[in-house]
Image (cartoon, rainbow, N blue to C red; front, side, top):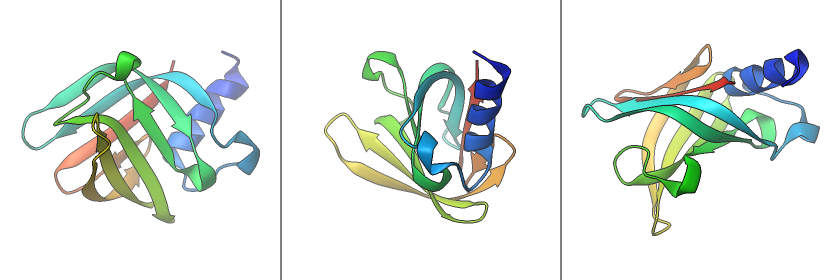
Length: 118
């Protein structure tokens, strides 16, 4: 991956607004996702950039991430603020809550989502 592409992924994960031309770009990443219940996933994931810096992550082969979620969606709602949802294998959308940006991570009251370029 070129240095420019690596920087793009890092910025997408950490900044609230991204170039609209890059929307829906998928790339391999390393994730660290966990919650206050002691569930944690650290490892490879697929990062999909959405509009205005929103993004989602999934594991390969739709493996479970934490709880029943096979996908985690981070939807930007304002500068440095996002709504986070998990999606189960049955398509159920579960609201995790609000999160604030902290470098390449988003941290809520009882969860975190970090995505790093490879």
